[in-house]
Length: 249
Ligand code: NDP
Image (cartoon, rainbow, N blue to C red; front, side, top):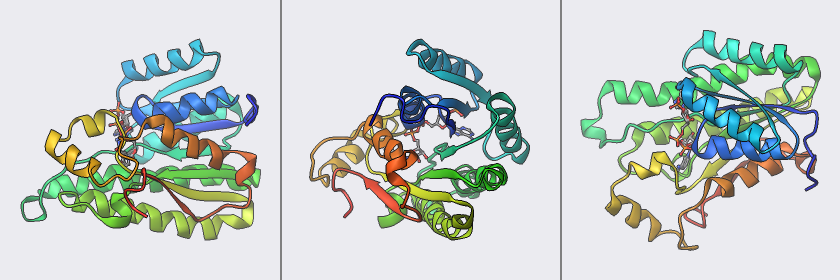
């Protein structure tokens, strides 16, 4: 792909301040897009946007919690006011609150569904108004292997990610009329703060099931998003792309 494949495009990446979201924002900025990254921690957002700008990109950080409708709307408004349009939304913000079903607290269920599923819904609804007017757009939802195969200790997270996959397909059908493509990327085991929090045993047990025998990088996931954001993916919508080293086939 050419260095400026996304020149003139505007991207919003929720949870773009670290981990997979930051890798996505950096790569799309490298391709020439202006990126708006969101998260709850202001200092981390400043660092992330400064890092992207230091590499020659254009980046703006916006403090916004995806579970808040006001914040989601403000994030979209800020991107539009600043850059005039929104071409690509990456719903990446996500959390885990793991625990066995029998012991799971109501709050663990509500928070995980809130951030991973309701957050993506709020952002998709807010951004699609702009994309419908433009008659073009790309929405890329970061799901998870857990949403396709389930993961013990993650009924909340697996449900949220499976829900995100269903929402991706329904929105793809609704929005195709306006030239808006909606896809999901489902990462497997990826090295970030989220997986650093796992126990060594749980990590090793999962890694033993990965045919490629290594943990994935944020860059591995970002490369798939880069493809889906680009011209080459013009005939692709309503699909789930697994980036997992073969963990789930
Ligand atoms: P990290 O925990 O490393 O980063 C999460 C990002 O989301 C941070 O930028 C965080 O910023 C932001 N975030 C969290 N909650 C909110 C919120 N309520 N509103 C706005 N931003 C929020 O996670 P990963 O990079 O590992 O994960 C990114 C995505 O990939 C998630 O959707 C995750 O479920 C998915 N995924 C990850 C896998 C992995 O192995 N790492 C595997 C499969 C899927 P802040 O804390 O400042 O708000």
